[in-house]
Length: 194
View 1 (tube, one colour):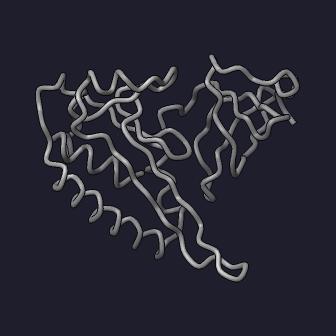
View 2 (cartoon, one colour):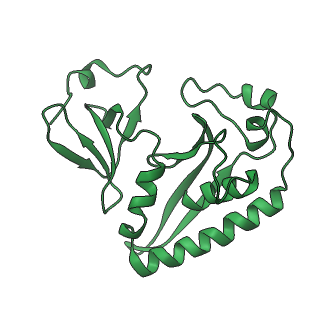
C-alpha cells in the first residue's frame, strides 16, 4: 500500500512535495484512498504447501485513467471509487506503464525493507497515512461481535488498534471496519465491547 501511495504521488507530481488538492492515504487493512474516495487496493493470498507457508501472492490495483463518468458507474455507498484522471477533473491522462514501473520498483524497495526490519519499520508511515486515525469506528470482529471505539492505528504486528469507550485499548488481527450506514445484524449490534 505504501508503494501504491508513492506511485500515485509520483504520477500526480505531488511527490515529494504534496499537492494540497490531492490527499492520498490508507484505510486499514488494504484500501488506498484519495480525497475520501477509493483509488486502489491490495490483496494478498497465502500459498500453503504441506501445511506450511510457501509464499504470498500480492495483487495491487490502482485506478489511473478512468474518467469521472466511468467511476460514477461504480456504486459504492461508502468510499466512492475514483482515479487519478477523475481527481484532475479529467484534464490529464497518465502514463500507465510509467506508473506501473514506479509502483513495482517502490514495492521492491519496501519488500527489501520488510525482510530486513519487519513490519515495525513501516508502522509509523502507515499510521501517518491512515485516513481514519482518531475517528470513531465500528469494527466487526465476527458476525456476532461488533466493537465500537476510536481508531488508533496499527500496532507492531499490523493489527488494528481501537481505544474502547471504557478507556481500554484492544488490538485485532482481522475484521472489518463497518460503515455507519451499514446494517449490522441484531445479534452483533448488542456487542459493543468485550
